[in-house]
Image (cartoon, rainbow, N blue to C red; front, top):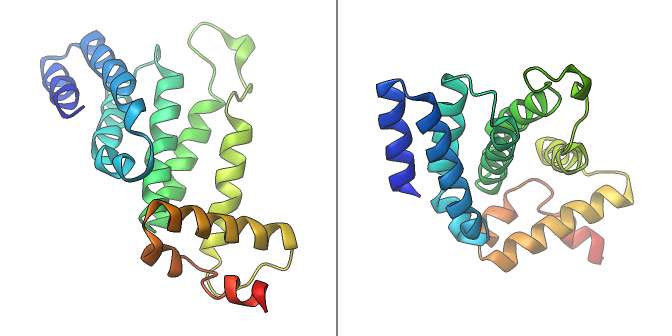
Length: 173
């Protein structure tokens, strides 16, 4: 994955947009296997860099890949409790998701990943409201499930400080 990132950076310096796109696609295909648990955090920088490179070369062929890269970067940021950075990445993904592919105005506004992004955005909003405990039981359950997932992955210390840390105790009482 790191070699693909280096290849993409070198291709950008040479002005080879097609090679940047190819390196980003190969990196995504290799990196998809690593998008679980702790490995996700190890490839976070490469995901972010490829998303930035594709944006810099204004890639229109790989808009869906750019959306995926921004979404995964957002997930990594949120997993590290970098909530505002995660929110910014999620907004970049949402903006790209509703953009029409070049030469195909009929697809403008069709958001392929809307449902996934809306779920992620809702959870992010809950986490950003640090000092408020959600009133809706569904929101309480969503935060509790997120805490459990994070503890199962082994980053329980981060889960405790993720806002709603006392939620698990109040739900059990």
